[in-house]
Length: 104
Image 1 (cartoon, helix red, strand yellow):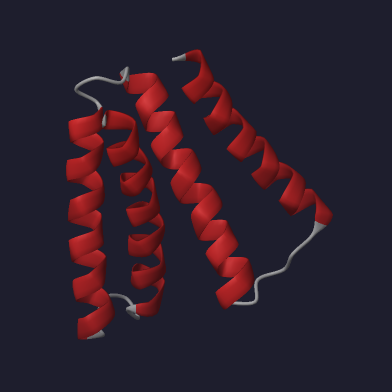
Image 2 (tube, rainbow, N blue to C red):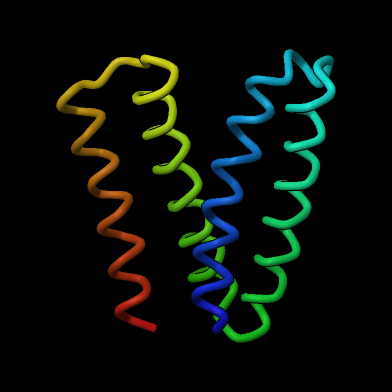
């Protein structure tokens, strides 16, 4: 159960990062509210998952999911550059997350 919560928390990290970018420096109410809700959910879920998953592993997986998800969102929705180097780096992040899960 902790791993499922950790994955959801990582996805919520992507949501809050995207909402923060859309909030215009927290000046737009709806994206700002989404940011606050997603941030809270992400942190609460991370805290719950870390009851069972070791800190280093859990935090690395959470950050990896959030970083890869945010980069994917940026490339697909915000038309950020898609380069071979960027895709290789994102693939390494995902590989590291999978590796940490496999080692646990």
